[in-house]
Length: 82
Image (cartoon, rainbow, N blue to C red; front, side, top):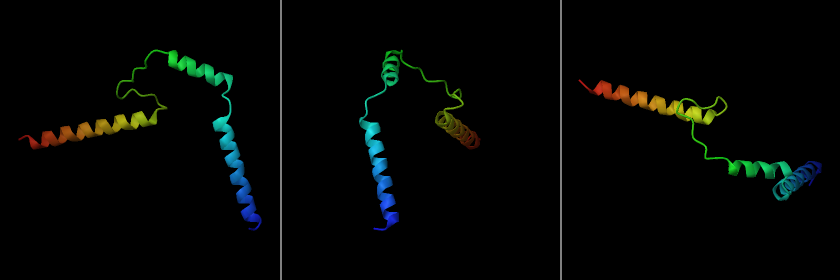
């Protein structure tokens, strides 16, 4: 196991220790307070379709896909009616 193999093992062990420390470490005081405030807030209502936040790219993509599907269905129905 050459120098390159030893370096890979050391990096993997370091990442494992870091992961273990993050998973099993005690939560910071700020994290515990945030959890309490989130659970105490009233139920969130979803944004109306087409009005998702600019940062919520997944919601906007789903809204866009739904709009395109509805347009396609409407166009198909209009073409099938004489």
